[in-house]
Length: 234
Image 1: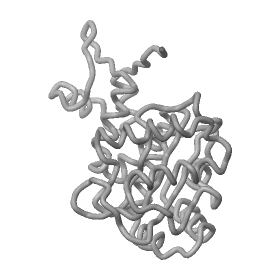
Image 2 (image 1 turned 90 degrees about the vertical axis):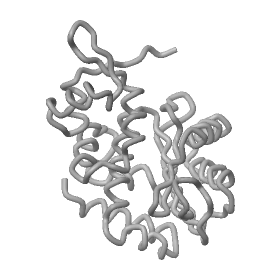
Image 3 (image 1 turned 90 degrees about the horizontal axis):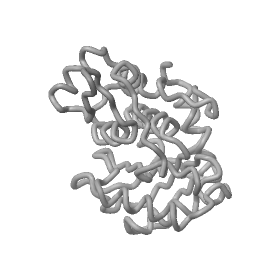
């Protein structure tokens, strides 16, 4: 079993894009999981990742941009990390699925077109288990299913898939139906958080989801995502 990775409060503040004093107050109030060792706070990376995801929808644009910058991977183009991992090959419009489970089954199949999903059954199980904990759906009718932990042994490379269903389906996350699905499969936490932050910024871009829903092909959707990414402030 891999030993947990720990970070200091200064490292956490940089990752969150917040002043250390603000983070200290949040930690002292029990808002961020951590432990005090000999007067210094320590934070387990896996716990922080889960905390970030649970508060993801409340992040400001600036906080998402700071998180994204702090997690930049040398394997991704910093100007368009999503359209680096996501290709027309891993986009299906319309997505052939009518239920929550069939959406995730189909997305894993679509991601598998890259031949980078080495253990599709294990990957699907991990995505389903993460979804059982708490839904990855948002009020905007979009969901970002993903495993709870990185999957370095099940993936050749990090990969994404996108599907848009003809009609919304019940996927959790409130009463609204969901019809846009981004599957995120990463080999490491930094890539995962970078992609999650960038998706958050894209989703908040005016007209982004509406345009995706109007896309008639995988190529058209990818071109739009790529252009939108390049237009985001750095």
